Each structure stands twice: as C-alpha cells, then as structure tokens.
Length: 251
Image 1 (cartoon, rainbow, N blue to C red):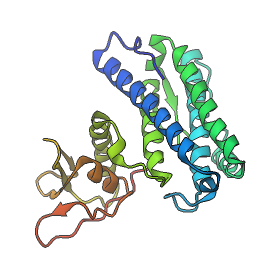
Image 2: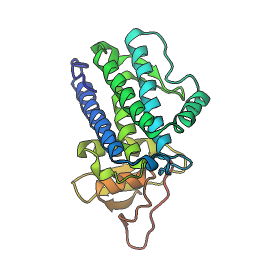
Image 3: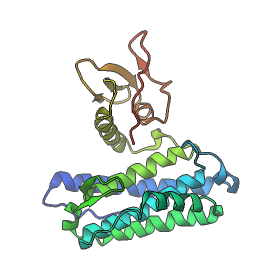
Image 4: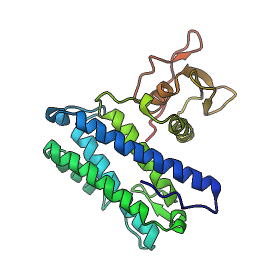
C-alpha cells in the first residue's frame, strides 16, 4: 500500500496516512514471510483465537482486504458500498475459506492484499476525507482504513501462533497502537485505571483516571500484548503486592 500524496493540505493527516500505509505494507510482507515458512499441516492447527484455525485467521485477513476495497470504492465514488454484505455472510465466507487447501489460502491472502494496494493507488487525495461506515455502523473517515489494515495484519500475525510477536512490530506503530488501544479500552464499562510505563523507551500511556491509575511496567511490546488480550502479562510488573487488573476486550 502506498499513496503519500493524499492529505497535503493537512500535514498531520498526511503523516498519519503515510505512516499507516507503510505499516500496512510491512504487515503484508510480514504475513507473506510467515506463510512461506508454514508447512501444509500448520494451516489446520489452532490459532490463538478461540475456535479458529490458522486458515480461519488468514481467510479473515483476506476478506478484510476485500471489505476495505469496498470502503475505498465508497470513498472514491460516493456510492455507498458496504464493507460486508452482512455479519452472517462474512462469517460464512470465513468458515468456507478455512477449509481450502493451504496453497489456495495463501494465494487468497496475497491476491486480496494486492487488490487492496491497487485500490489505494487510485484514491484521489480528496477522497481520503470521505466518511464511510464499518460493519457495526460506526462512521469514520476513509483515511483511517490503512491504519485499520496495519493493525489487522500485524496483530493477526501474532494470532497465527507461528512465532511472530509484538516485538516484531515497527516501534512507532507499537506506540501508536498503545495510544489507540488505551483510548478505546478506557471507554469500556468496568475498565480499571492503569498507567502503562514502558521500560524500553521513555513513554507511558494512561487508561482511565490518571489520578488513581495503577502503574504497570514492562517493555512496550509486552504492554501491548497484555492490553490487547494476547498475553497474561507475566513479563510485566506492578506495585509491590498488587496483581495485574483485568481489562475489557479491546475489540
């Protein structure tokens, strides 16, 4: 994915778009490398996502690319184009796709990613400001789509459970992801107040009320894995005698 011409009138938006496109492109390449190293039997093995095999995860990524192509088409043409036909159809497509031979799954991930990259290339600069809508009805500007794709490819690379980790993420993306997740989770019912303190860089993130936030310390990658529910936080530390709190689901 690459198109850094968009958003020149808004430097902040242009930088966010350029960063997100780069991270999404890196994530696609990372996934291709992981698939290349997976043996045929590995595709049917369980992923880290309950009830899903690795083929389910990869098919989900491919259908996610198609949904984003639909949204980019909506932004570019002004013609409402739903991300998915319906929740039921999306789920059925993933279930059906997960039963295919490994070579077909790999080809689907690669070709859908290439189609998405082409859809990005034909986006007019002004179209990135258009409002689109996700499957849950949330409206957002099209400029967020590459960021959503970057998160999808990198996080699900970990969910494949084939050796990838949050330590593989580009460092600036990891910081942006912690910003994003901290903001979203803070709005969930029952969310505790925590202060995430990175031990490998001079950064911290607050979830909830900063005045009563419980300190949680660790490498940024470990903080991210725990906050996103991909780790129990064994590599993290808290104030003496206190346990890690439970945080709501991110998505």
